[in-house]
Image (tube, rainbow, N blue to C red; front, side):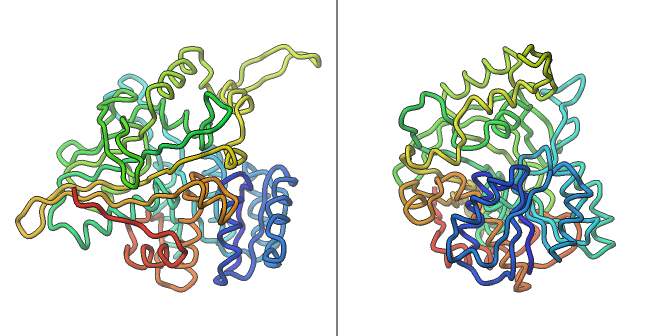
Amino acid sequence: MRVLLVGAGGVGTAVTRIAARRSFFDAMVVADYDPARAEAAVAALGGEGARFRAERVDAGDEEAVAELLGRHDCDVLLNATDPRFVMPLFRAARRAGATYLDMAMSLSHPHAERPYEECGVKLGDDQFAQAEEWEKAGALALVGMGVEPGMSDVFARFAADELFDEIEEIGIRDGANLTVDGYDFAPSFSIWTTIEECLNPPVVYEADRGWFTTEPFSEPEVFDFPEGIGPVECVNVEHEEVLLVPRWVQARRVTFKYGLGREFIETLKTLHLLGLDRTGPVTVPSAAGPVAVSPRDVVAACLPDPATLGERMHGKTCAGTWVRGTKDGKPREVYLYHVVDNQWSMAEYGSQAVVWQTAVNPVVALELLSTGAWSGSGVLGPEAFPAHPFLDLLTAYGSPWGMREE
């Protein structure tokens, strides 16, 4: 297997550090718009970096990405960029005949008249629209293969196959007790992506009405997270699992709720109120004359890079899937989860907990594809594959998962 990794930010760099310890691939080309980032990711591997090389590429340039895949004989493209670049990278992989993996899916667009009641263009719709083309070609696009979506979807498949006869509700629940020294506001993940998913209308799935939307931050609930994290208030947030899980797993209701915290929510609301969440350019004066900039990009530039916060971070992050239903005629409720302690991920890999937890899952998936334990064609989510091989290999990577009976 020869892999083109596009994106050498926090998650992409963590991917290289995890993959460097595994032998399933022959080469990994690390490409970024900023060649210095790609070179730094490779250089940090030291003696483990012989199979890696750095390149420059514009993720939005479909032709350039396809050419890079061909030039290095890469048979897999792993997308570690933000969701704006999903479609050009997705198309470039198909054009070059490569397998495609991402950790976030194509962008949504709210319904024009009823944004908080009806779906417009849903997350992943643009990719699923091309599923038949991929399937006819015998090619695979494994979409949403991070932690959430990704591992959380694998948990849903495991619950359906192993733990329940009927499922009433699948609810992804994400929470943490992470703090960052020296910052009053320092998101542990890309603020561009965080704004996108938190301020868009959240999607809920119900079997008798399909997908529908609600107001941002709706249906607050307190969820008690394991391993000392404790109770965290969680709210509805737009996320891919709600669009993926019902395609392969039968459940009467599917939700995603994120433990954001009141202060974080109020900050996001303020950004929205001021129009600083907008992605379209606005014209501002500069010493060189008027310049068109995206307000959201300005917000991102003003905040610290999440990948650099590891030394200042303390605490744990938890990703998991809560499932309620019946087994052998009796009610059952479980929470399948994965916790990463920032102290451990920094000591072991030099990557902060949130980006490391995101990065480990596509590497595990790549290894399963390389061995044939996972295989398929078309545009498929993680729940389209058997769960056991993934969960077993994740544990073998030194990062076990857990289950709590509720």
